[in-house]
Image (tube, rainbow, N blue to C red; front, side, top):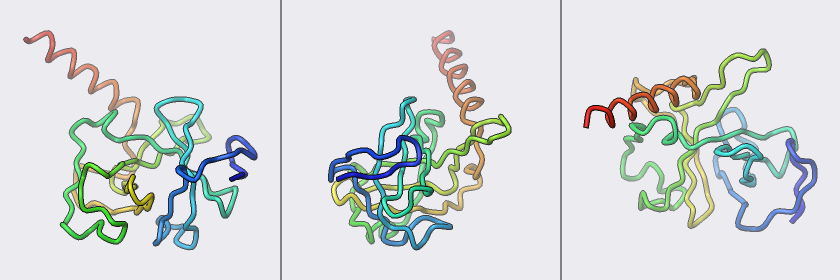
Length: 155
């Protein structure tokens, strides 16, 4: 399948890369069909709409820079995407890279959860006060690296 992307122009993608968001994403509720692409710079990914070339999001696993990240969800909160087991869940945060050179931030309050088995996704809103819409990715990554180094030194 050929998709025109914001980052790479027209590319071929496999059916396995397709993700359906039955409710869309917040602010983009009418856009439901996407593909997941590896970004040129790891550990990032692109979530590219197949319906509108201008709708694309940079994503990252929040666990890479916040190992303490957790989603406290009700049992049926993800049933609409067929998710009944945490093992089938892929969790991402949408990243913002400001044009003015400000810090790259990730939205931990509104994670994107994808069921790897059904290839359906949903964006959530978490009520946990620890998670904000703008977490400085590099600062938190540095802090966690420092915390890990301090733990090793104290052992």
